[in-house]
Length: 244
Ligand SMILES: NC(=O)c1ccc[n+]([C@@H]2O[C@H](COP(=O)([O-])OP(=O)(O)OC[C@H]3O[C@@H](n4cnc5c(N)ncnc54)[C@H](OP(=O)(O)O)[C@@H]3O)[C@@H](O)[C@H]2O)c1
Image 1 (cartoon, helix red, strand yellow):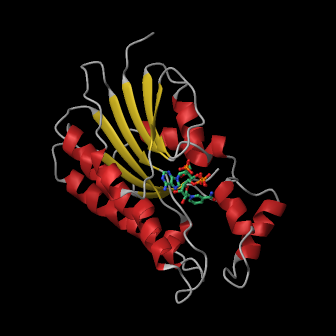
Image 2 (cartoon, rainbow, N blue to C red):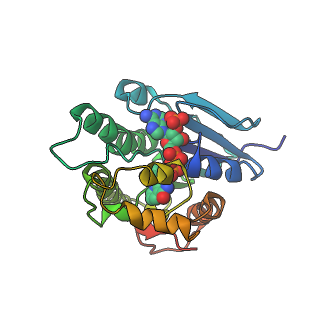
């Protein structure tokens, strides 16, 4: 087996985009992948799964990132796990679901960015954090207050982190990107199509995208995510969106 040259930490690797990214990264020689989710669906000698409920903030605060060796050339964190939360208007939402969704969508990515930078900031190694965003960060949809607000928070925490990194010496700075993947054919879209139109009036927009076969395939989006991580071009925007 070749030496480990890349460390990838990816949340939400049991389905959808996170699973597709992990599987594509594992095709890279020397890449070690650490995945985080409540379920595991990947078996590979270079894949390490961490069974965790990412709404459990005590457990999230226990997460530690691996020590490095001189062979490591790239360290990446992809905060991918995300939930729609309860789809209904404010006044009808179960408060517990508001709390749990903010935990997974906002507080956990914030803690993991913090832990990642505490662990690796000093290293003169290529480092990248991708926070998975959404068009919903910028567009208010009735019934999606939790989802829109949490994705908007992802954008702002990425902008602040990127500004902070820009003040550091280039050799140790970490690239931070909030990346919206476009509308993809995953369990999340199935959930949207199953929503009650009274609770989520824009439902038919997503039903039509599916009917007209306009959903992105996760494998194509995953390949673009890896391109973004590997892209060295300076002066990149912090907030980006995948187009296929
Ligand atoms: N699909 C789209 O059209 C679309 C569009 C824009 C943005 N996005 C974003 O893309 C990302 C991936 O979504 P997806 O479409 O791939 O969704 P998905 O197929 O539903 O996958 C969600 C992943 O997150 C994990 N997850 C959810 N809650 C968790 C929890 N409490 N603890 C641990 N893991 C948890 C799930 O793992 P377990 O259930 O095993 O825990 C699963 O691996 C999300 O951030 C989403 O907001 C998706």
